Image (tube, rainbow, N blue to C red; front, top):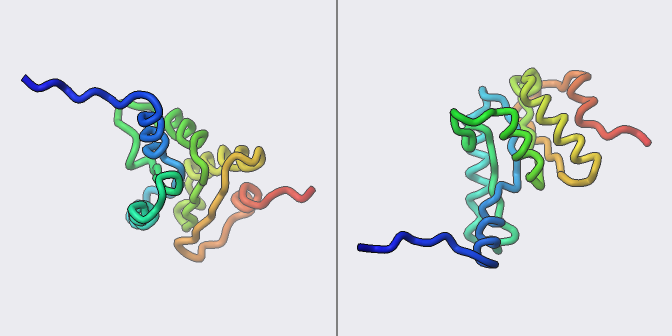
Length: 140
C-alpha cells in the first residue's frame, strides 16, 4: 500500500502558495470572455522564462468560482489580494454593473496605493461620464 503524498510544509510551502496566488485580477464583461481568456493565456504564457517572484498568475471569474460559492464575496476577496487590476474596456464592459462594482473596489485600493489599475481597450467605445469618474484620479 502506498502512502498518500503529504502537503509541503514550512518555507517551501509558503513559496508554493505565494507563486500559486493570483496577482492579476482581470475585470471583463461576459461577452468578452474569449478575449479575456486569450489575454490571460498570453500573460501567463511567459512564466517559464520568469523567476518565481516575477511570474504572472491571473484570476478571472469564469476560471475561479465554484457554483456553490457566493460570487460577490469571492470577487471581493480576490480583488483584495491582487497586485494589479487589468480592466478590459469594451462596449459591453462599460455597460456592466459587475465591472463597475469591481472598478469601485479597485479604485479604493488604488487610492490607498495598494493596487495598480491597467485599462486595456478591446474596442474604441467611448467611456461614459460615470466610468470616467471611476478611472480618472481626482485633482488635488
